Length: 151
Length: 151
Image 1 (cartoon, chains in turn blue, brown):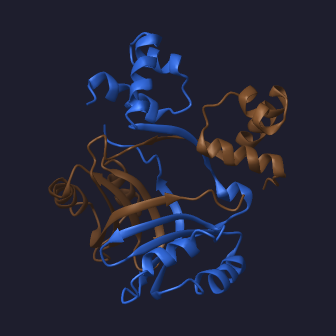
Image 2 (cartoon, one colour):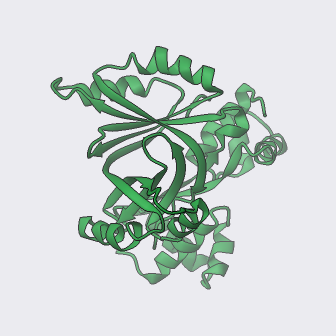
Image 3 (cartoon, one colour):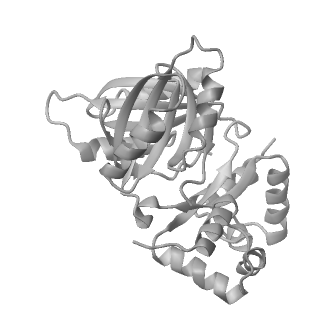
């Protein structure tokens, strides 16, 4: 579906997402028109879904980030859907992932400080439906965060 | 720490979805002039609130059918250097993110692979052989949602 030129464009763009299409074409050694056509095609195919800004919550005063690994009570038929629908309503939840493994769901939660976290945890997380177990991982540092694909 | 007003929040919500729009186009959506919009974006960038941009790629369409989150515990026998571990793990192309955490595990890794046999290869050849790597827990990602957060 994609050829080496497409992958090269994505590789360069992934490394430097602030490049304009013209700059990107130059890096990849293509004409702007050729690069633009390939980019448009990758967007149509849904390979390239967009470019979004990344927020640094610490700069907004959210100093605490916690990963909550949750096991659900699966004897309840609708446990996943009911849990997810309620979890989405908690503003401090910034990521929601479901898994196959020992853990069913993981939530990333941000808070201003530990007191704020405690408050969210007690009043908005523990009240979510069908939880059978919760483990918390406290976030210390991001070592690698580019989230690039090895294209 | 930066305080945001309502317009900043709307601007951020829009930029998280699509950071490629011009200041003029963004301004028209928010009812601001092009220079006023540009100044607000600049301010958010300078305050570090916008950490950067990220390409949103469809991993599956690019041939990466499997994403696995690994919890890694360091083996405490011998002297383990966190720096050595972090450097080595960050250099693995299939490892997309590395987070240092407190709790059940020491590190949380996000790993992409073409399929399960490919993941097994990465796990055995690259992760298990890392300096200091001890116990590893794997959870295969089934679904993922990024939420906009408390804006």
